[in-house]
Length: 271
Image 1 (tube, rainbow, N blue to C red):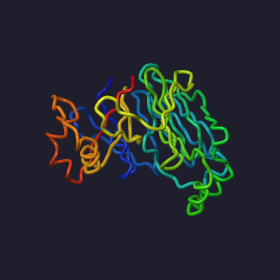
Image 2: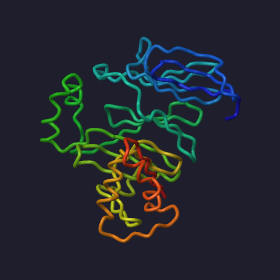
Image 3: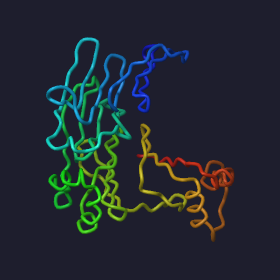
Image 4: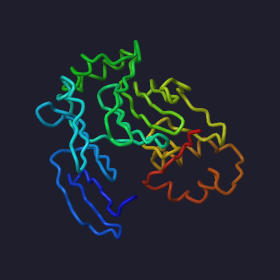
């Protein structure tokens, strides 16, 4: 943090709170709708799903000197419910570029390290594409989607798009039995497509779900009881060796906690 101010966007309060380094609240700014906001010292990026102003721009860059608006709302997308993204803006560790995964499309918006819009990355899954006309029709009739997805093998959404130092990670959702993890190089070409993981390190179950990322890790959360049951099912007939820091050490130290209603975080390092 280069300066002494910490900005925090609190969605349920629809407010931007600013604190000094001692943790004292120094200001509160109300916002009108649920935004995604990215803060830097000299600018902020804001995303409003349904757009603002006469041209309904969905992204804005604010600084002390000017305001720049980008990407008008796509026709028909006002039908979708408005909500903040679970991931928001994500920064690539090496280049500093900033990415935003757009909901209800296969689009990723890319911004420079300084917050200026650079390009839209559009993925095409060929015969597995979700037709735009169907997507828009189901925007207001979600109850009709179940039969459609049972009958059609398609990519319903890009669940996550994470920028890492040596490339990108993307997870696709096409239903409980039709999902994939894809690792991309820096040119956005697939390096590996994974439909199911085999854990050759300790044999425990790996869930192909994602929650967030660190600079070099994919993170998912799992109900602690489910983690407990996975562990027991995997190792119930095996003689395990407890070594400081391994999964058996973790289980033995946290067995009672895992049987409660808690969440366990699993970190998978990306190399």
